[in-house]
Length: 349
Image 1 (cartoon, rainbow, N blue to C red):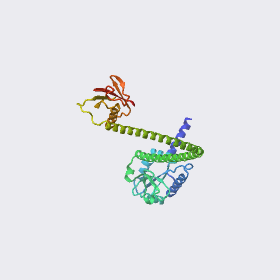
Image 2: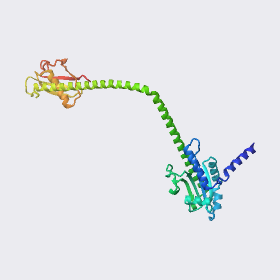
Image 3: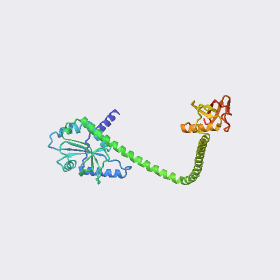
């Protein structure tokens, strides 16, 4: 059994180290990948995404071709990476000399001027304009159906280590797989949106009759709310009118009884200290014949002019303890002469 496992491992390693480059021509391979791209775009559920195209070119006149191939491009780690992605249908490889027809075609397409040359491209069917949906650099306008994901050439490629080249190629392949994952996620989201819209349409049709009934109920509720709101507005307006009328009556009452405060030396007057709930003191002299309503009118005007938020109030005496409820009673008859303290009670507090 151990021998069998060793044989299986040897076969697997051999598969990963075999030559990954296709035998078909450059143009044929590109057309095949472009066809796969078209099929995938038209029906991604039944056709897998197309592979990236790894292109290698060299010139036989370049003296270090053999050393680059043997020590770098055909390094066992490079071959393992390339074959793994070829077997996963993520990558297709083609290589050749520029002295062949296919090589010359590739050289012209990619505008290669130094060797060795290695490029990783994404083949797109020729369209009216170049695709710009990736972060990669597009090829020239003449050959805009190739998107460059990786390009290395000349002395820079010749001097690169197998490890560094492996890293660059691996990163480019991972980015492509990320792009494919994003595209698959976008298709899934679109399909979910379609399914959601269909479900919403079905629910709408089923609920149409109920919506109409609810619409009638909402209209009835709206009318009821409008009526209540109008009643509330009318009540507020009525209260405001009452407040304005009270204030007007208070001012008229003060005018009738003389708005001027009696002098300190005047006889027959009362010095009254009005204590507000806030602790504020208001002192004023009133004639003994002034009524309690005159005192109230003075306070109403004072509150209005000084921004004191008291509207409904009651006047109370502590000595003797009583409420000044009779508005027609005079200051003198209520025992407020020659001086008194009146407590102002806020009835809304």
